[in-house]
Length: 281
Image (cartoon, rainbow, N blue to C red; front, side):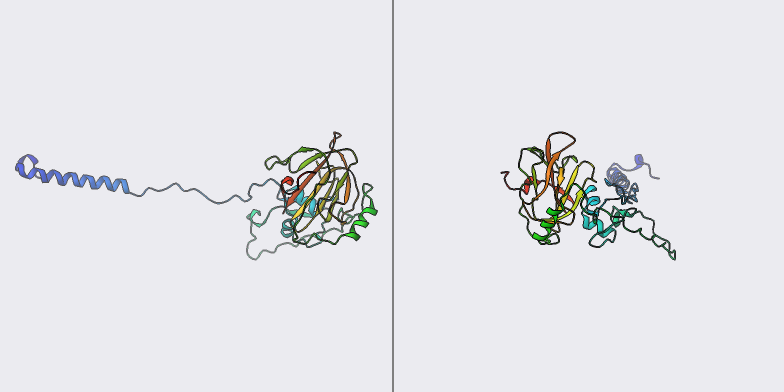
């Protein structure tokens, strides 16, 4: 090794320049060396978090419409997931899937494994879809409605809404509050409740908690409307009703003041009725 002190002075500058340049190369190499990144698993969980169970067992008086309504689903989507064809008949004890294929558990059958056949469905018990009207309804009104109106529930026609009753707006819709999926209109006990648009009655009863005596009307392929807390229903399930026709009498919510709870849903999702209704008379 050459001693720096033994070199002529004019040769010292290039010598130290070479030393500095080599040191710089080492520093750059250290800075640009690849670093192993932390491995993070992006695998999705077996079930995506949703606000409903993955399965539901049908009870007496359930209908496909009320189950879909209760869990915020479009009834056609629920029917497709469970291979149920129109007129969407379901049976007590039947198990329905409430989540689509992407939410199903990841447990594929191994190759060559036989999938057990589903057990035979029980004979239908007179459910709400096929049962006659209860003593809350007037069969004469339902028969009159069906004769007067064509079935438009499968159409894609444009809808022209009207107010279902007269009275003071007691509560507005909220897209963030689950307890305010519709509006509440105050009135008097027994006040007429009218169909907000023409359509087919797909539910009439008190099977949905929080709605009292409830009526649901399907107006076309996309829209349903609901009328809750009635004192009396005047139409049966399956009845075809005309816009403006009286379908119920206003009742009370939990023993309080008379009020009508009114909802509109598009493809199973609640929407603000005030954006569809005309100016209040």
